[in-house]
Image (cartoon, rainbow, N blue to C red; front, side, top):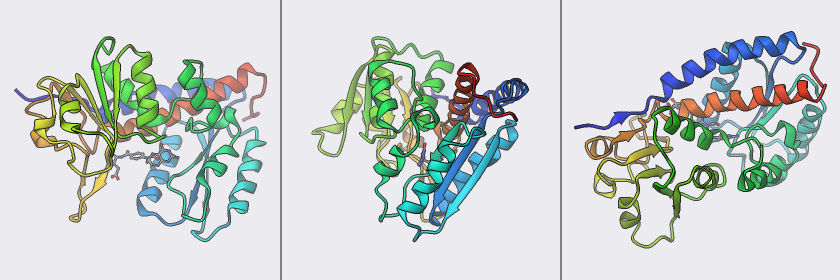
Length: 290
Ligand SMILES: Nc1nc2c(c(=O)[nH]1)N[C@@H](CN(C=O)c1ccc(C(=O)N[C@@H](CCC(=O)O)C(=O)O)cc1)CN2
């Protein structure tokens, strides 16, 4: 028996079609959802993600702006742009594509975005609210992974969830979301001893290490749900995840593919957060007169 495939492309497509209707409804109330994306440098993968984000906005009837800075731009230039976008009523979400070039203090840059427009959910206010279980912008990749679990009817409560990777963008917020949903959560990382033993206990295994095919079939409990967050480009140009998909799919109960799993959900959840921000602006009496 092979694993059920958790199809992120299909779910993202359905969600994005619904967003269009909501965007039109908000536009008629003076708040067409607006996203500003900032890209610094020429990282080819980032260029693709930014292009996909802008195209996704257009498909869903959102307003979007792309601001591209050269790789040798100063932090002051980028901060000035963020300040202008913070004050722009047509913009409900501001996103700085990561990674930033080495000369940037990424934390200081992300911190310059006002919390109400932090649709990536990376600012300390949003991170703190997530930990406390308060309303906040949930980082897009973990939110997308949770939505895939929900769509597949996975009952998270009481399950053993193991996350491999402790990044601020994926591992830590994913741990919070799974914990809030009632899972018993273990976060593994580069210093974890006997990683395979931890993974084999997992009913839900989340791989977010950034190493191609790092999780082998033997590390997976039969019937487990495997969420592969990794996107690794191989020398032949093909993409693969952090999980050895061919080995995993004959052991797991359900698995996300790469490409076509969590990646497309990241962009769908970015639109969901931007929509939420536009809705908040209407509730607070500050549309954009679109
Ligand atoms: N500011 C942010 N920076 C980064 C984030 C983020 O959430 N916010 N996450 C990643 C990159 N990322 C979004 O920005 C992202 C990665 C992958 C995909 C995606 O759709 N992947 C496709 C394959 C695309 C391809 O052909 O390369 C898939 O998995 O099917 C979307 C968004 C780091 N930076």
